Length: 292
Image (cartoon, rainbow, N blue to C red; front, side, top):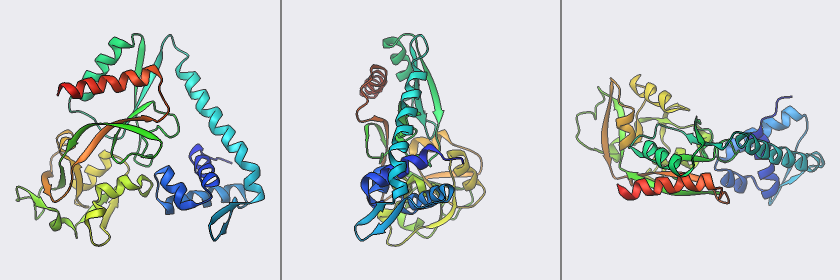
């Protein structure tokens, strides 16, 4: 039986909330995605973990027996990860990334971090959009560069706010415009983040600014897959102005979009994580952005 830590984390959240909707909000995933993963776990185990009641759900006897075991596994794994990172002469700060950062932020912050934390190594970890926490939720990252909104349980410091624009095939009907009103994009097929990205997916689809559901051309799990889909003519995608420069490629045109609030790039960390290495990196980024 191959059970993943994410499935155990989902199970524990629902068991503690006794409500799938609240657990989904806490985990920053969509309710359908959470329910699907619970069904997968139940099929693997061969028994139900929850029964539905008017107020939400209750644990079955099997679920109640499994809950302390699942909590113990998650806690022991998190502790083991921390011990492994601390095994070197100083340690390693793991930085979660979902897209390239650029903007001159990361390089300057790393130089300042190394000056105040000598001997510490830095590891960059690419995390798919299926995990909107950038690896912070399961402890596989110490800090993460994330676009707002960030999941509950995290703190964030906004680094830049950038206008949103649209990346589209170079021969698109709107490519000749200097600026594209969002109303012109409502019926266009969009490249979407995975449903597990939750509110982050909604933000880059501009759900709040639509009167109906978006047309989804294709779902993509990484930035490279997104821009490959755009260049292949499968749809358009909203991107931050800085990312349009970072992912410039032949066959793709970027135009600013009017009628939308900006996107905000932040450095995020766990709420109760005050370890010196984490605070040193956050402070380094604060120093860099204050100078800009």
